[in-house]
Length: 329
Image (cartoon, rainbow, N blue to C red; front, side, top):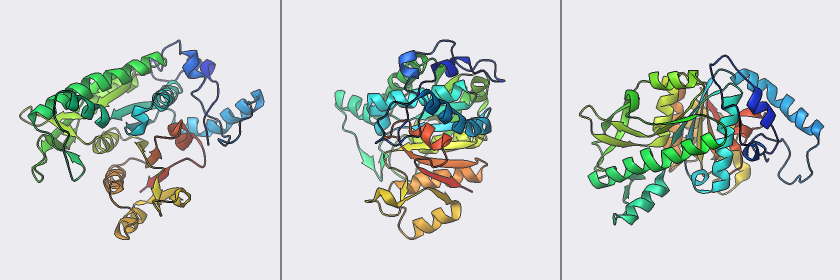
């Protein structure tokens, strides 16, 4: 299904109990692409005004349900590389924020890190899917994630009419971590504590926090944190309604080569069984484990969605069918 509908007037006028929800003027050319239609991608007909009103009315129960709630979105993969997909993600975030849904964006930036490592003559190195991060690599990771990538996302949010604020896990002692000594991969950490105070202050005032996943250990050493893991821990600390992991796959598939075998909903027990049976395997396992951990800590639901699909966030959250896999406790 595709997403397209004009709601610039809605996003600029809707207010909630929070002090400020979004900037008063939203970029109309972006806003006109930001809401969704429940039409199939093959339906090329121009939407009528009645179509638009019907679509909005069908989304209303979800907007009411999530109004005032917190949703944490992990952003990475192809959706960060394609300018059109990136614009769609940003406008989805701004729209959710403007209708009273507290949104937090947690991001990675692997491709850009690799690009800058190559520019300074450092060959990217991975072990068991994790980036080997020596001191020189950590300097690049911190500069690229906390600087170039983070601030570019904040800028896009501002252009779309939202109010983004860039952070790393170091700011406000948001993320505390320890180095993963079990693997010889350098300055890579796992989260030991989340202090969500700074995030709560921001979302309560209508800002969209944009978090780069760099943390500090007790000695102040910067550590590179897996973005999925960080997003899950942040969602748990915020008691978020939902965690959304954007990936480069359609969701959990029974047959990885057949999109028609996508599983639309799972519970924790079902996830464990699929891991045991080898259906959930490889890089999907840590994502599922991340979802399970945050559910165990009070998050209502976790979603794995395809970041390569336009407006997949809105389609997953605001339609009955969704477009990914929803996992519940």
